[in-house]
Amino acid sequence: MFLAVFGDVHGNLPALEAVVEAIDNRGIHTVCNTGDCAVGYPWPNEVIALLRDRAVISVQGETDRLAVRVARKAAALQRRLDEDRFRAVQWTHDHLAVRNIEYLRDLPLQRTLRVEGIDIALFHGLPTTQAETLHGDDDAMRFQRVRESVNVPLVLCGKSHVPYAREVDDTLFVNPGSVGVTSGDGSRTRFAIVDTDAAPWKVEVLTIPYDGDRAEKALREQGLPAPPRYLG
Image 1 (cartoon, rainbow, N blue to C red):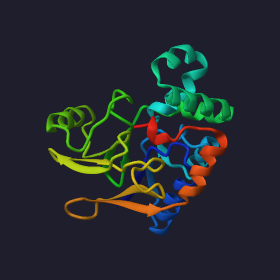
Image 2 (image 1 turned 90 degrees about the horizontal axis):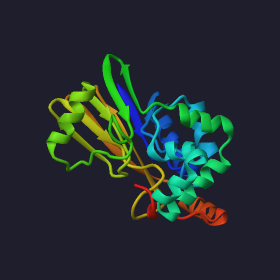
Image 3 (image 1 turned 30 degrees about the vertical axis):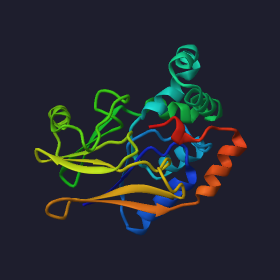
Image 4 (image 1 turned 120 degrees about the vertical axis):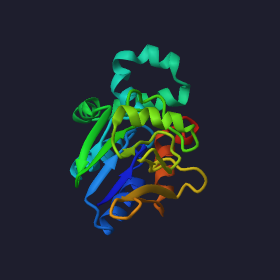
């Protein structure tokens, strides 16, 4: 089985379009998204439309949840979030179509799926919370705790924006990095491919070009802060 996984799109439509095209060119049909798809760049509706049209298997990220809740929790969130983060969350909520707010609201925190006989856990940060995550250099015990709770051989997660693949006690953990927010060269984006036909299973993190100038221009035109300053 070949499976593609990406996450942390953060409303960056040009980057997502490049990733989807690259996945299509490789003929991969099973595609998972680790969440945080809407808040950041000014294409939340277009990103969600693409995810829905392609039937991408998705979970709710932390900023997805904030964009849904901001209408009811604005005062509390404004106190808790820094100015740029709150402004981006509020802007996203104000510009989202109602059906897309409902889509984000209804995304699950965690999914367990079976593909070609392999059980897979998909979540944003940790199985029980979106606010924390695993990092590739964390102590093995953190990974073991997650493994105990999900009990599957393949775990897909995101949030940190930093890609890694790590095997702990016969469970492979994969973070594909961020589609929408990358450090360094802002004209490149990332996703990962998992090959379970290989022995042992193989993970390839691909870094590909996209129209970063288009994305940065759209931020400026909408008066939005640059996402790397407040996301992660």
